[in-house]
Amino acid sequence: YIPGLGRAVGLLHLGDGRFAQAIHWFRSEASWWDGTDPDDRLVPDTRISLAAALRATGDRAAAEHNCDGALSTARALGAPRMIADALEQKALLLDDADPDRAWAAHHEALGLRIVHGLALGCLESLDAVAVGVEAGTETRAGHARASRMVRRTQRSDNALRLSQAAVRRAT
Image (cartoon, rainbow, N blue to C red; front, side, top):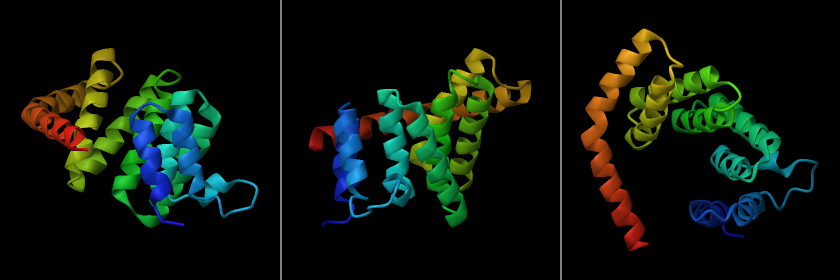
């Protein structure tokens, strides 16, 4: 057993769009558990990634279960990055069903990332908030704040995309 291997391999599969393999590897992190729901034994980071893979396969109920569990644990631990990541997944699950709640979750995730200096996640949150602004699911004050934040981060966004491309080429 190599701690973290299941999550690492699962993330590679998730990034390549091989969702069934990603789910298998994420769940392998709790293969030692013979209880009723091994997903509940996964660490929040793994559950968040598992929720993303489950959402991509259309298993919304399992995705929501894992997302809610990860969010609850992350809040109990006081882990802002994990809280923001779980909120982002929650928002993606809500996008079609409840755009207003989805926008609010994206906005909360963005706020946490800004307050705690979690710069890499800010760009994804800003994109999601900007989509909410375009869709009209925000307040007038929220629109003004989001517009200012989007303008301020355009240069950072370009730099991050270049660095992400360089990392992908190197791996």
